[in-house]
Image 1 (cartoon, rainbow, N blue to C red):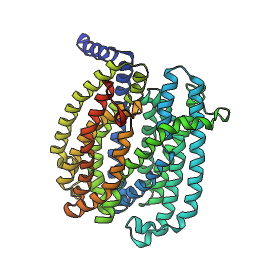
Image 2 (spheres, rainbow, N blue to C red):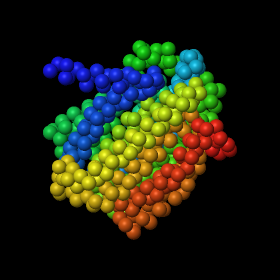
Image 3 (cartoon, one colour):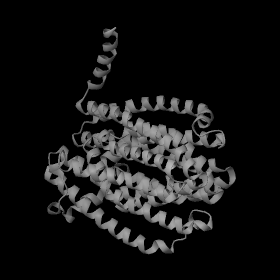
Image 4 (cartoon, rainbow, N blue to C red):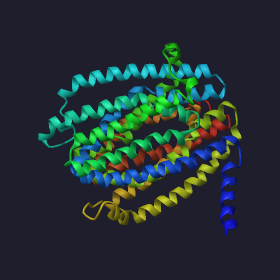
Length: 456
């Protein structure tokens, strides 16, 4: 009996520990990420009906839309976060610990200055912003929404700087450990919202405080711990702030900055477009579908997260064969994932009834278009991680600019013609274009035939 149990365990352990050291590290992180992200998914699925029950579908739609708008300010890091990720990974690969500390200290200093200016500016202009019009909310909610926006933006600004610890740990090819912060924040948020449902009536202000403060507290504790223990030699210090090194971060980071803006326009404007075209209540069914198929993108991020910095390391060491083998395995994984997505689509209406209840009707067309989107997104992610890791992102930049110009008018047009699914279809069309050129660029780079824009 014991032998029957130990054989699979030994086989599984051998599967994890077999292969190149870099591959073993990736597999260990993927396994850890599956556990942590799996628990995070479970929490997020519990949070949706709990939050809707607490504040009702219309207010939940308002909350989602406001959160999306505040999230746009993330692009004000001007790409320094992703620039740090690549430069830090390169520095530690070469054993240049002091340079790595300079990059970290300089990034913290720059982002702290940026966020201070943003926060002061927002405090000044917030009283003059008509949130009820922007969110298409009832006129009587103006004062409440103004206070909510202030709360959400303040906590967002704090996270803006504090979450750099996750960038550092991920760049050191330990994304599973970095993901623990989000999980702990979500877990505490769930507990607080559960208490709110038992002790208060639906209140957006309480919701904003609960969901905004918990990740900040977790990040403060985590930052203090890691920079006094495991990452003490990289701890940010005024002594190591060298603004002349900002150019090294900026040269790569500015490209990521514009790609981030494009991603916001492509993927974060749907809530606003839907709220304006169909009302804030219709944001709720869209978000439920997005969260349901978000399981696929969550699995994608679990597999892809360790690869960005691993590709950086392999590229610095000129380990081309490892990169090619990894991409080949990812394409096989994509086929399996696509089959799972199709199965999720077939079962979607049944799952919605069990999860949310029969009162909220969700059109099958939204699920169909969203399933197509996540499959395309997963395919593109295979090549995007490599291109990000080696810093060859000029074509991504141009593709993102076209996306900025086309997505919103296309989403509005298709939304009016087809409905909510038309808004999602706009992203599908733009993402499908990237399916064509990304594999071509990666092949050219690995075969050393990339020239001009293909090699930038």
